[in-house]
Length: 265
Length: 163
Image 1 (cartoon, each protein chain N blue to C red):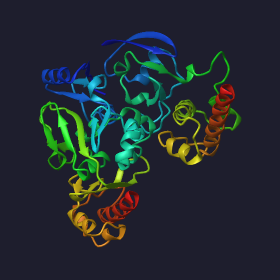
Image 2: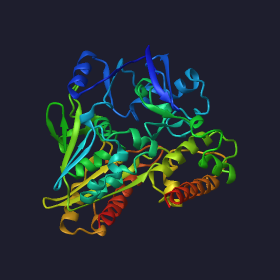
Image 3: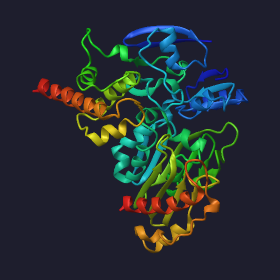
Image 4: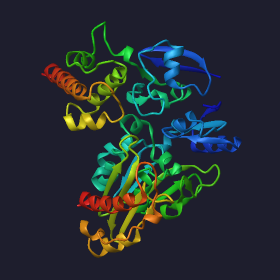
């Protein structure tokens, strides 16, 4: 790891100020991606601004069907929240499938979506739930937030502080995990609400997380596992690597969508 | 350089280190507690698992400065008065190790797991929760048996004490 200087932020304002003072600095949430990347010398921020000790950043609040999850909430807290499970169990299940118990104790929802790894779990859920990403300066719809591979709508120094969404009538997540890393080779989150059906796909798309409009329409007409069978998933739009070819991933998208609908019930 | 002060196995300790020093290296090199191991260095193997503020974490993926002010428990800190912790005893009894390199991480993972599930542990849950710990000797069978036996012993003992 290259040299770096550590700063512990005490509030969101403090963090944004510190970040502004260090052009080549980075926010550090749970560090489950960033520290690993720094160890491999694939990232070399001059300064780290630790967000883990900002009291307002963690926690889940639920008001009726309205859910708000602080950016600093670790996956383990999302997974075990009884309040969240009562309105959106699919998101608890998703959080419980990320990494392993130790990663879930440190890794946070804010870190995951700000990093927008093309194989991360949360971005699929944020898209399918039609979530809004709250930052230190504005609200961004998930549809506008996830731009491409490791790319988001966040401006330089902008920090995710929370996510919010209306709990859907039904939702489900299914993932085919890479057996070594536990990242999604393909993961599909489906959500059905009064406004229709939304389908978020992670791990598979060549340009990162995406919505599959064909499946959304098919499931909107008939909410049943077999509805996705006829959907058109073009291998040309899929990632291809040593773990899975584009054609294999294209097939997995349908299989995971089917399982996600089954999970949603 | 930063001065890091934290509580390790009940003792307050301090040390100077580079901001980039990993917690596992601080524990091993600055504090001389070499029970916590470094296996893969890529956050996958789990030999470096310790408890930070009561939760299992991988100390190879946390900077020592991030842990400043925290309460840390390592494998050296779980046996009370020279008596093996029930999880350690179960690993011995059920032969849940061969070479022993992964064992400190396995034991710390098991202690955390048993604590979080209030006695409601079954084999499938144990296997799911061992995903972050790799053993290249045992095939996991005896590790799972040890965790389940320790769970029964610890929660059985709690029930008896409560009665």
